[in-house]
Amino acid sequence: MIRCNSFIRSALFAAAAAAGWPAWALLTAPIAGVRQALALYLVGVTALYVAGLRDGAADARGRWRRGAIALGVALGCGVLGLFTRGTAELAVALAAVLAVARSAFFYRAVPARAVAAELILVLGGLSFARFLAGPSLLSAALSIWGFFLVQSLFFLFADRRARAPERHVDPFEEAHRRALALLE
Image 1 (cartoon, rainbow, N blue to C red):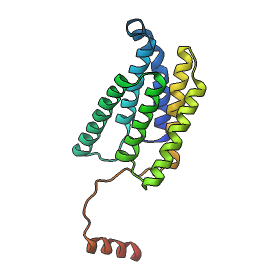
Image 2 (tube, rainbow, N blue to C red):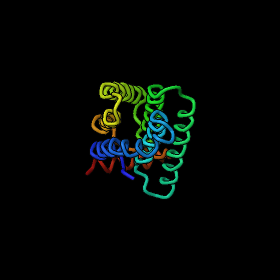
Image 3 (cartoon, one colour):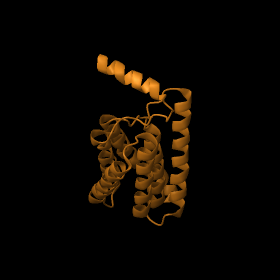
Image 4 (cartoon, rainbow, N blue to C red):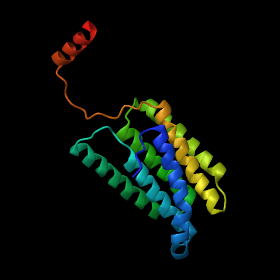
């Protein structure tokens, strides 16, 4: 699985997701139809993108947490795929799920800043994808690439520090740490 925790890696994921669409469509469209194949692909690619996000926790607990979030997102995306009426509605819902998962669970920032950043990225990504969209398999692949390429911009301007588990810090230890930092 491609990790999506930097601009370059996220852009590579965008290219891989776009390249995978025509093959997926050729395999599943004769069975399920092009629209259903696209819906399944969008759900799967969104879940994979969220699973590829890293929150900096390398221990077993961090991997379990990341896996639980990815599983929850995958299930949520699957439910959205069942209840949305069209591809555009599904794309908007999946973009919202991606934004919430990224800013609420992995890369936490000031709430107003996170909302503004995610709103810009989601609207920009969906607009760019709509601009590239068309009736062919290639235009759908370009659309997928465009959306995830815009999502890659998150790592260029957002606070990249992964959300650390909240823990209680002893005020004395914190003051001691700051005093040592000043002395050095």
